[in-house]
Image (cartoon, rainbow, N blue to C red; front, side):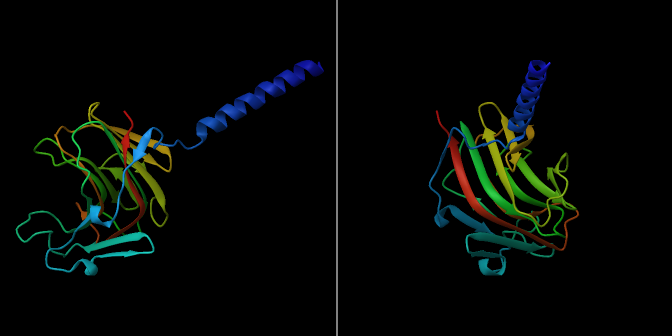
Length: 218
């Protein structure tokens, strides 16, 4: 009887351990190489009639980007909505597997805004990915909802774009939230910040730190 009890207890412990291992966050960066990145790789896009300092700051390692729905676009004749974004230059790509990692923060009240993009797609589309915030929910474009309450907390974002397989994986805090199809195109790059979409709030803000660009080992 005691032997049976011990075996049953051991089996239960094994199942508990398996469950806990499966629930541990993944490391999406495993098998990737981090690429050199410095301020020269950050191109700030902001309302064309304002200095950078009116819509962007970088203090203690944190990028703070904000914009108003009444602001001008990034160039005088642009038909696009107001934005303040960082375009990561020097790492445009057209093949292989690339990854963006960053810690993001969206304050309560910011809504109707894109906070991260994989730019590049087949026309009439312009982007392979947009992560947006609507009323506190983080979404893939307008739907589906990936995280229902993203306000006022830091989260780790990992976006993996496999160009050859035409897939985009989105991880939040090490948990795979969505696998999206590619959208064509032949050249891509990463962006983060705030870019007004539909029904945007008057004031839009996001903060970012720990930005990395990585490439899959081949």
